[in-house]
Image (cartoon, rainbow, N blue to C red; front, side, top):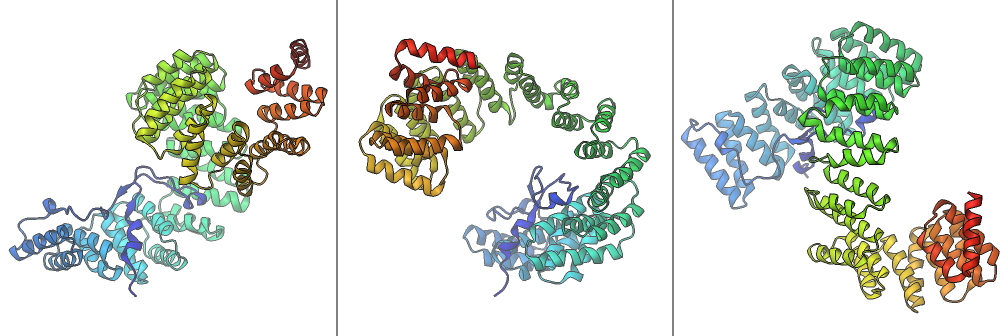
Amino acid sequence: MKQAATLFIPLLIVLPGLTLTSADKLIAPAPLGPASVIPTQNLEKGPVSKIDHTLPAESLYQLMAAEMALDRELPEVALANYIAAAKETQDADVAARATQIALSVASLETAVLPATIWAHAAPTNLEAQITTAALYIRLNDVEKAVPFLEQAEKVNADEAFQYYLILFKQLQKEQDNKRVVAALELLAKKETKHASGHLALAEIYLYQGNDVDALKMCEAALQMVPTSVIGIQIESEALLRKKGKVVAKEFLDKHALNQPEDIQLHQYYAQFLLDNGYADAARKELLMLVDNPKVTNEELLQFARLSMQAQWLDIAQKVLKRTKEVPESKDLSHYFLARIAEMQNKDDEAIEWFKQVLTGPFHVLSQVRASVLLSEQKRFDDALEILSHAQPSDLPEKKQLVLSIVDVYNLSHRYNDALKLLDENIALMPDEIDLRYARSIVADKLDKTDIAESDLKAILALQPNHLDALNALGFLLANKTKRFDEAQTYLSQALKISPNNASVLDSLGWLYYKQGDYKKSLETLKQASEIMPDAEIAAHLGEVMWYMKDFDGAKKVWSNALESHPKHEQVIKAMKRLIPAGEQKAVMREKATTK
């Protein structure tokens, strides 16, 4: 059977600006704005407007017939017409469209002809060169791939380097990986001016653990382009692995000295120094970078990130107070200034910075974080006011905002308001598990057990092994009903999923308590407490100990819980319900004295 062309479609994704500077990044490079090389996902709308209408009438007729065939869901007919037109006209746009259709509905063998026409007709089109090279590599015709890789390097050496690594990463089968390496090795033998093939091979060798060949390729690349930052980075990492940080640092020291104006190199140098224990040198390097008048705003943001990583908050603040004056980075700068203020325990300052994040991906997160800080100060109305002005840009942000408002309502004991808000949103998003789980908690607080049970069962209908829902439903049935056998079933299922889960063991211990099996309850709750010291577990454990006449033990458990959670609602409720009023104060005084 012919190879399915759809297996190749993931190759037709380009990540502009992607630079892999360590072997690890070959495993999971970060996409910085993916763009489709060929829009393979939408065949209905072809680039007819781009096609030269001075083409022969017969070719134009073929193209019209092809697009009509696509409209009628006859892609094979469309492909035949497009390939015929591409062969006849040798037109780049026609050939690109033919390649797109072939990759979507036919085979690699079929796609290689129009792709080759496309590459020859558009010699400066990097995507055309890489797509054609990749097809030949997949078809095990490595030698034919090399001229297209070579042409890509001539078009744009830096981007070609990135594409070569993407080819290696996305052609994941072992034989395909070997073919990519073989093609790059042939390219490296032929190429004496451009270093992209050498650098890509060095990166791949480093990823494969072949430090010796990685160093050879880096040295060859730096002979051609002595100031290549990528080459310097890869060689330093190869040296670090093979000869240690002292040798790698000496290598970088030399290049940093020889290239004093290369900001990208000095940023990497600062990161290397920080990562390898040269903190003082890294700080000195970073301060020089920050004071360089030639650095871009984007580079300043990278310096801020590095400063925060090193806990040099003074440098980070210095940088961010510059970047916040630039409209494009204002909101991001405000966000990081807020995080720094939090790290310094300056909550009021953090709140003000968070409030100033008015747009962008951190807008909703910032308003939510401000509301959390305000809620910790019992300023619930202020928290709700901030959340009311947040502008979610998509469904996940809308859900996050709703849940944050619910949190404020819960903390301020406005459970009916929380329930109303959740009712409204679940009506619009009935399958949103997080909303249903939140409503089950609120409903339980309001003793609306039927609603809580219904929501938890709805979650389990969608996700039968949802651990939190199984645990919550088991606890609900144990605590609010006499349906102990059902509770046992849900909790047993939860324990199968997570055998030593302290929260589930706590629920099971409470079930035993409700059934009157105090001994088994005590054993289970002690086990839960040993796994995870927690105030809620302590509330339950103390109550069981109290009913087993171990009054001093119960008081000690509660007192210890109040050490770390002085206002824990369930601990205090258990104490008020069970300990005489005079003795409650004694336990509280004991807690305060111990503290």
